Image (cartoon, rainbow, N blue to C red; front, side, top):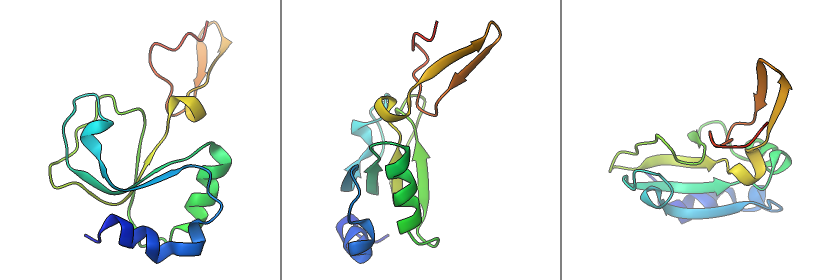
Length: 117
């Protein structure tokens, strides 16, 4: 596993202009509800869908990507996660909308207690 800052530096200008937060060697225990787990080589928290799309275009296919939501029901092994972890926040990816009495449209990081009624 490459050191997180080295991974970010390797991509250099490709990551320029991103509005989200890039964190090398991110402590996954700080973002999971179970407060357990090793380091993510690098963590990206996109500002919104447009920022996520730009990030995905910038990262070469050979670099592993792991997408997580708000960290509930997530266990991370002590050995950590190689490549980038993309954390979708409820702020940018947590909308919920009632479509009909039997259908709800929920974004990827919608907390289960979201008031979509």
